[in-house]
Amino acid sequence: MQHDLIVIGGGPAGYVGAIRAAQLGLNVACVDKNAALGGTCLRVGCIPSKALLESSQHYHDAKHSFAAHGVEVEKLKLNLTAMLERKNQIVKKLTGGINSLLKHHKIKVYTGTGRIDGPGKVTVQGEKESETHTAKHILIASGSVPAKLQGVEFDGNRIGDSTTALSYSEVPAEMIVIGAGYIGLELGSVWSRLGAKVTVLEYLPRIMPGADTEMATLAQKIFEKQGIKFQLGAKVEKAAVDGARCSVKCEGTDPIQADRVLVATGRVPCTEGLGLESVGIKLDERGRIPVDMTTYATTAANVYAVGDCIGGAMLAHKASDEAVACVEKLVTGYGAVNYDVIPSVAYTHPELASVGKTEQQLQEANHAYRKGTFPFKANGRAITLGDDEGLVKVLSDEKTDRVLGVHILGPRAGDLIAEAGAAMAFGASSEDIARVCHAHPTLAEAVREASLAVAKRSLHV
Image (cartoon, rainbow, N blue to C red):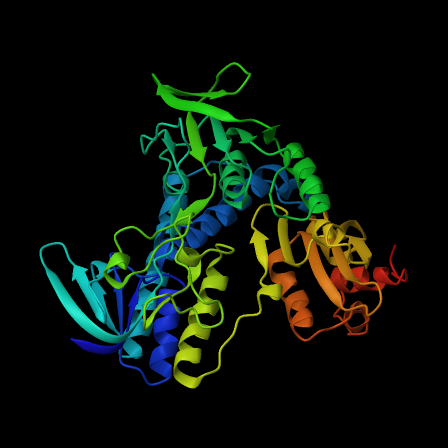
C-alpha cells in the first residue's frame, strides 16, 4: 500500500509523530512489533513504573506515616498480586487509548517488525508472513533497549533489567541494583518500600549522573534515611545466579549476595535490523542514527529519525517533541525543539526535577550566575502534606537575571518544574517569576521564594 509517511515504531515518538502528520493531512501508517502501541515507555517503562511507585508509596505511608495523621491501620497486608494487576490494567487502558487515537486519525497500523527495504519501501514482518509498503517519506522512531553489562549473566528472572523488575512475583528479601541513575533508583525505591533491603552499586563517585550535584547529594542522604544503601565507585566485574541466590562481585571487594539483581546501567539505541544499509545509512560509534538536528533528516533521501535512536537525552517527551517538529518541518517548513528547556524527572520520593543548566555546567563554562534556594521545610503546603524534605534551586545570569536552570527536590517536583520550563522558554528572569502571584498555600510558592532568594529577598526564611 502507498502512503505519504510510514513511521517505524509506535512509542512516544512514533505514535505522536504519526498523529501530528495525520493532522497535517498526510496519509500515514505506523509499524510496531507489538499490537499494543505505546513503546517501552507505556508498556514496560514510564507508565508501569510510575504505577508501582504510586502504589508502593501508599503502602509505605500506611505503614509509616498514617499514624501521624491520626489514621491507624491494623493488620496491614501487602497484596502484591493486586498491585501488579493494577499496573497491568493501567497499561492496558492507555495502550488501548493510543490505538483508538490512531484509528480516529485514520492512521493505518501494521503489526510486525518494520525494516527499510530500499528507497521508499518498508517491509513488515508479521508472525506468519511479510508485506512491503511504499511511502514518500519514512520516519524511524525505533527507540532504545536496556544496556547490557559485561560480566553480568542475565537469566530474565533473578538477574534482569528494568522490565524484569516490574513484575517480581514476590518481594525479594535482599536486592542489588547496579546503576544509580533514575531507572535504578525508581525501581529500587519501589521494592525498598515494599520491604526489600536494597543496595545500589554505582561505578561513579556519585548518584544520578548528570543531575545537579548539590541536589543529587541531598537526595542520596534522604534515600539513605529511607533504608537504601549505596556503594559508590563500585565497578561490577561479575554477576550470576548462585543456587537460590545471586552473587555480585565488584573490583577489589568480596562478592555480595541478594535474591534479585536489577541491572540499570542505561539504555542503548534500538537500531539493529532496520535495513539502514539498504539506503546507505551508517550508524555512529554508539549505534545511533546520524541526523540533521534541524530537520531530523538522515543521510538517505526522505528518511528521517527521532527519539532515542538518534541520541541525546533518552526521554519520552523529548522524543515526542522531536517527532512533532520533524513532521511539521516536513509539511509546513517550520518546526523546532528548544533543547535548552527539556525537563527531566526522577520519580523517587522525594522527586528530583530539573530544567536547564546545572550549577556545575555553569561553573565549567565560567558563566557568572546568581543562585537562590528555598527549603520545603519552610513551605506551609509541604508541612501540611507531611512531605517537607528537599529544596528548590534557581540559577540566573549574573547580569541579565535571565533564568538559566531550575532544580527541584521535593514533593511533586515533576509537576512544579513545568512553571520553570515555561518561564525559561519565554526568557523570563528570576524577578519575573518572583513577581507572579502564586496561590497560597501551595508547593509552587517554593519556586517563587527561591526566585526571590536570587536577589536575597526571600520572605519566609
